[in-house]
Each structure stands twice: as C-alpha cells, then as structure tokens.
Amino acid sequence: MSRYSRILGTGSCLPPTVVGNDELAARLARDGIDTSDAWIVERTGIRQRYFADPGTSSVDLGEQAARRALDAAGLMATDVDLIICATSTPDMIFPSNAALIQGRLGASGSAVFDVQAVCAGFVYALAIADQFIRGGLARRALVIGAEVFSSILDFKDRTTCVLFGDGAGAVVLGASDAPGVLATALHGDGSQASILCTPGRVRDGAVSGTPFLHMDGQAVFKQAVHVLERVAREVLDKAGRSAADVDWMVPHQANIRIMLHTARKLGIPPERVVQTVAEHGNTSAASIPLALDVAVRSGQVRRGDTLLLEAVGGGLTWGAALLDY
Ligand code: UT7
Image (cartoon, rainbow, N blue to C red):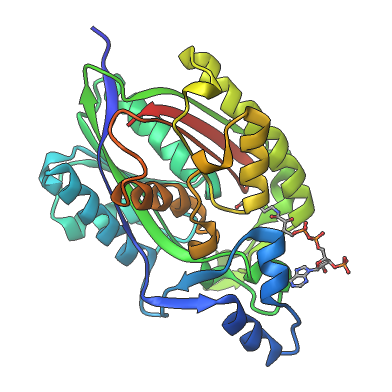
C-alpha cells in the first residue's frame, strides 16, 4: 500500500496595513523617486501590498497562519511531528523560525527547521515534508511560508520596492493512503545567484555588504518563463497527468505576466489560475500558501481538485508540485 501525504488544512495571515500603489508612489515621490500606479499595474499586475509594522516579524505572521491551518485541519499543535518554515526573512540568524513558532504553539518535540529557497521556498518545504511523511519520518507536518520582505527593501530602488509585500501562509500535511501530493520536482542554479540576492552578512557585530534586496528583473523574468513551464511539465509527466487534468494552477505570485504566460504555454486557461498578486504583491515564500488559503476559503478550490503549484526565486531556485487537494 502506497503511503502519501495530503493537505488537511490551510491558513494564512496578512499584517493589517494595506499600502496601495498610489500611496506608495506618493511616499517614494517625497524622496524624488518616480513611479506610478499605471506602471506597477501594467508591468506586474500588483495594485497593493501589505506591510508589517516594525514590531511585527515573520514568526508573528507565521504563527497566526499555522494556528489557522491547524484549526482548519481540526488538529492541535501537539498532533504535528514536523514543522518546516520557508523564509528568507527569519526573525533570528538562529534558531530557526520553525523552532520559534513551535515554541509559541507549545508543540515541543517535533522536528523543526527552516528552508531557505527564497520564492521557491514553500514548494521546497512542501516537497521535503512530503518525503518525510512518505518515508515514515513524520505523520503530520506544518509547512509554513512566512516573510517580511519590507524589512529588506530599499525604498530608494523603484525597480524592486514596488514589487514585494509581507504575509504568511501554512498547510498541515498528513499521512494518507490516497493522494495527496502526486509529484514534486526541485531545481537550482547557483551560477545565477547574483541576479536576485540580498548579499549582506553579519560580521563582527555589523552588517557587511548591503542588507537590501537586489534584482535584475529582466534576467529573472527570462529565466522564470523558461524554467516554470519546464518544471510544471516535469511534475505532470512524473504523475502521469496532463495539463487538462489541472483544476487550478496556484503559482508563485510575482508577476501576472509570468503567471499567465506559463499557464498559456501549458494550455491552462487564465480563469483556472489562482491570482492574488494584485492584492498581496510578491510575498516570496508566503505567496503560494497565501494564495491557496484564499482560494480554499473563497470556495474556488474544493476537495478533490488537482492543483499545480510552481515557483521560481533567488538562487536561482525553482520547483513545482502536483497534488490532489
Ligand atoms: O519572486 C522572485 C522572482 N521574481 C520575478 O519573477 C520578477 C521577474 N521580473 C519582473 O517581474 C519584471 O522584470 C519587473 C516587474 C521587475 C520589471 O518589468 P520589466 O517589464 O522587465 O521592466 P524593465 O526592467 O525592463 O524596465 C522598463 C522601464 C525602465 O526604464 P527605461 O530603461 O525603459 O527608460 C525602468 O527604469 O521601467 C523603468 N522602471 C520603472 N518605472 C516606473 C523600473 N521600475 C519602475 C517603477 N516605476 N517602479
């Protein structure tokens, strides 16, 4: 009998402050930086993003998302034996966000670690949790994506600061005799690290190098449209399914043009693509579980639907997962 993992519940959390494009453009204008709602919408599809206040961290957001996912699954934190948090904006150098969230949930005993695969982090974490469950190392896992990207944005760099937002999403994954996760695929290309990075590091009590996000947007765009289609086909092939079997594509929400281009190449109609980029902006590792939770709670995604998740991010890293929800 095959052993699978399947999603038992989803949850998410957004900080309370919404910043629309016009408001952001007005803030940047005070520093002589020129941008506009029209540019941001046309190039990215983003209309607003949520920013955490300085006192709110990715652990705060991740904890709330985790609690909501556990509630949706009808489980207690102590029912979980693995917690993975995907994040590039952790609260501390160590311990991990997963450990800090576990401490708050009062779930001591489970395995805890973070995954650092930037915007592909949630797909990486989901694939790892799936392997833990299939391999018998865990029965139930909390898989969280939590970010406060506003903390690493340079608000003097219009090419990046208009793109990102803060938030968290989570799923509870549990062992199941029926699928569940059908196939996953993960890839990376470290030779392209410099096109999307935050190179600062802590050394001798200070940050050496810039602690701000840097991106060559066009270079990442070109890679994204190439690798996302390929990795999506890879999981479909592995699972013996076709794009026609996909009820919902739940892509990383970086840019509506990339999301819809990939869907079109795969033959998935735009109305089958879960789209939250307009409301959330790019929340990196949080974007897929956030989008999934919105789609589940709004009734878009239903039990039995086949979902295609895909993401690309700094590293470069990229990956996809195909699952029956
Ligand atoms: O989440 C991880 C993965 N990340 C991604 O997938 C992001 C991939 N890249 C992208 O989504 C797009 O490349 C961007 C949205 C970042 C940029 O869109 P683009 O269509 O590639 O624009 P561009 O970089 O070619 O810039 C076009 C013009 C430039 O001006 P010139 O050289 O044509 O005069 C930029 O200086 O737009 C200018 N520009 C802006 N103008 C107004 C760049 N940022 C802004 C801005 N407001 N915020």
